[in-house]
Image (cartoon, rainbow, N blue to C red; front, side, top):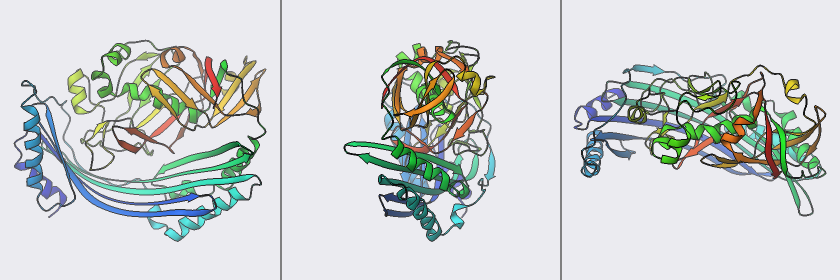
Length: 458
């Protein structure tokens, strides 16, 4: 029996207000290098599914690995939801209306990693590791390569049935150099939707990262304080994702009174050059898909336009509860989790300036590139750059030690005074929320300039 027939038969017996079933087949390969040698090879395959139902506003969820008795799984989820609904004072089920779809979506494939042998993947990763160790002064290296495929069949009680398949490739390559107790590192992350080619032809990038790690031993640390900083597209993309994107997820907003006060539609954040967008409708990226994990069509959602908050990200439930339109941002990392509101591809739109325009007039600033992580707490943020260079008299000059950028998001957005026209994207990261990580996402931005940004040594 086909997945569609199994799902439709099981849903026909549901007594819930709303019901859905997700069935997933997955395969993945992961190579991990620590130092000079291959440390771990992990190849996995999985098959399972989940039932999610809603009764009087209460959700029931049951995941499974055997597909032999889907009807009983539906009953389990319904019983769970009814038990929770008994204490919610007669709340009703609220889900925004979406058009039902019946569709089969083929994967985006440029160069299929599933057609590359494990031996070939390992040989190429060995080659990159050798390039790292050819650089004098290197004491350690880390290389991670991974690819995965997910084939998902989804059906719900509204009449939607869609099958989608997605194939991902991701890698992180870094090198460490040491002088006494001083350890410096440099590296980069890459990713792609359905394209093993992104992992090929990286010799120059790997050699440059290894050399940069050694060179950082001679770079001077920067004295902390407020300076004008210019963020490259990679770090600016991470900034808009972490510092702003999570505040745009509607479940975070309507469940938190403080965020309701901070993130109200119509609030002004900065100049008219600020325009932020999220959406799986951005084609060909790791956060892209045709339908989310509730069967809602993907979209491109304006978040900020001309410096004003105009939208946020929704599941069907958060859209209904806020009286806004669903955006197709309900996502689950796999069948073991229910979908929650998540970002997809989050980016800053192009401005009108050039990179040279951003440099003009900066007498004592810092150009920061790449990233090594960070943290946010509501409107407060801290990010570590992967690279930093002094700017003097409008010119990028010597490298300094990587720095941390921190501050209040809203004050910082007011200080973003220029946005370039050279938007780029990075797909080498993953997002975490609610125990679901790393979820494939894309981030992007042109270069941006921030006045009076607080920086400190990383």
